[in-house]
Length: 201
Image (cartoon, rainbow, N blue to C red; front, side, top):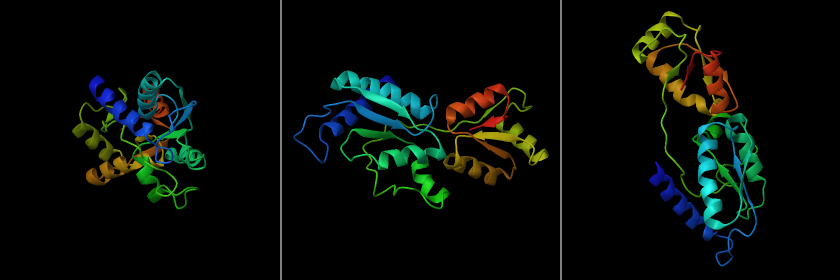
């Protein structure tokens, strides 16, 4: 994991040293705002804080994390889209960036026109987690339980754009569960730990 982050940071630093608008200009010459489009505590926030702490150390300038959660990342994305295109406002997003144009009828920005990708920071996967109060010890037992109680079990989501994996799971298994949406993964996990919801992925 450490090696992966070192490689990622090196590629990212290289990309930032050669911004398209000012190749000859030293970068950065002032603090850089990093918009994380989810609340603190989620995977995007954790990765951003690790990576940009190293960026600050490497480049000698501050990279300031600014959490702008809500609407599966659309709120933070709009902030970035409306910021000057000078390289001093960056965004950490997730797969919801691709999903949002298909989830929301109208976004206040154009994902392809208004935002320019730089690099991929990390790769992750989904895992299924249930609260200890849920009487299931395996995915097979959980599916059987959900099928025996259609529409009764609830689950946490980190926003509309994060529903696609769960939707696919529900279609594949034929189960019916009730989604409870949160602004980000951090809040969803807290809800799961407290027993407010029984399932999260």
